[in-house]
Length: 88
Image 1 (cartoon, rainbow, N blue to C red):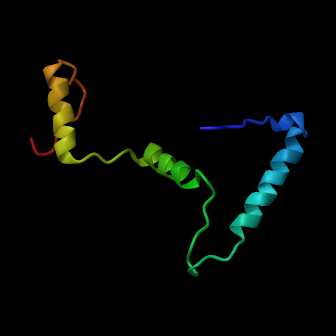
Image 2 (cartoon, rainbow, N blue to C red; image 1 turned 45 degrees about the horizontal axis):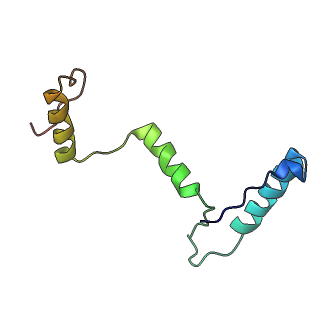
């Protein structure tokens, strides 16, 4: 993989660069969507939303998966404080 890394501060001050980026994001997000209720996302925006939701609400784990995690923790004597699986 070929990558080029550029430090924007070598070309412009920090504040004007961020202002230009914000104008670009506003321009892209003001585009017409395919459907009336569609949303335009910038790269990484969906992932940031997902992370925020998971930090607030936790990560849903299937019962069978949690049972396996709990059983493994028990076998290693580190299950103290872990909630027990609901179907145990």
